[in-house]
Length: 139
Image 1 (cartoon, rainbow, N blue to C red):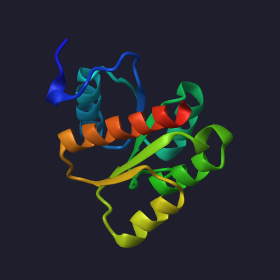
Image 2 (cartoon, helix red, strand yellow):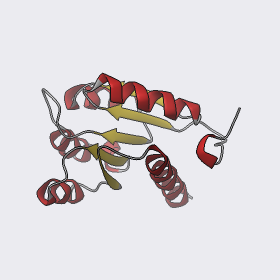
Image 3 (cartoon, rainbow, N blue to C red):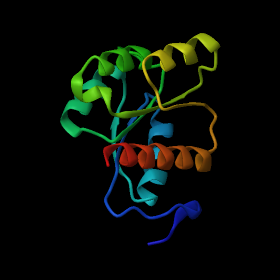
Image 4 (cartoon, rainbow, N blue to C red):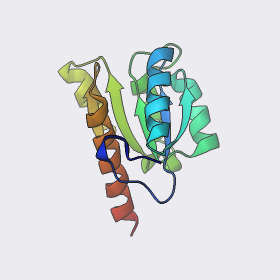
């Protein structure tokens, strides 16, 4: 395979869950992440995201805020109340850039916050960074 955007290849596949209600964003992220040898699972809202989290146990969650049924903040708060959800890395990927949205996400322990529209190479670097940090803590 090739090394997309100069990122290092991983020896084992990291599983990333994309939780977003915009099909175009989900498909773009899926395509780019899979090109970089990540395993990708998706959910269209926070409620589905919590269900998929229990089934899939992803390493990283890319989480939108504005979604139907259960928004990203509600999902994040519910996720952090679960024992398995306390250690998963979460990157908020959203159009919400207000200080109160970022502060609310930070209180729940996010790893990063990226505002849409986003630079794909920056997102990939941040994913790699949280994966490396997670591996270092596990050692």
